[in-house]
Image 1 (cartoon, helix red, strand yellow):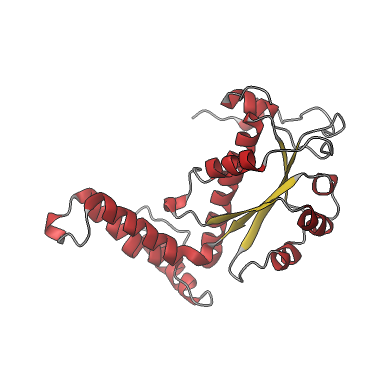
Image 2: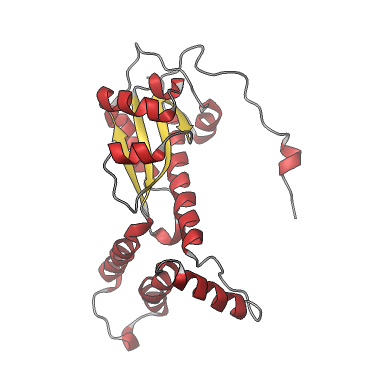
Length: 245
């Protein structure tokens, strides 16, 4: 393995690799380390509504490949990582943040003795997060949307409070973790390919995921072959996407 790359080097090295070398294995401990770095990704409200399923079993990879429509990136993968959102765990994750606050500031502090920082943090995870995530058949989300829309007429207001909005939040932050993972893999000289094209229902059933879990993407892992990259990298000219204001 080559010396670990810098961030800039890893970003330039990373390509979506579609064909992996069957003769070159990758170390699952290094892949796990890259997933530990994925868990350090920035995420909305530090709720960490994600799970990472590290597939090292060749049998399971062979079962998942048809669900990825037999893409070469899936068929030739040495390992797979399934990135999963868990919006349904919002209560547990909010509680975990409150426990962390207890470890920082002490437990059961009287309000009059709490610092403004502690009060803000406890209010955020005890009241604001439940307000944003709580819903029942979309009804609460619709009522919250009406409420914040009215308040928003008079002052700046967070408006993404419907169930569909919070689902998007969970997927955005899970995508940040996946990017951390792929850059970390590139730094190790390992290749990846993020695959959105899959029968997520069948993959979810195979992995026995709970009802509230959703698959964000499946990332194949391995070492590229000469034919593994399908062409030169193409990007829209930077001047067309960059705006300085």
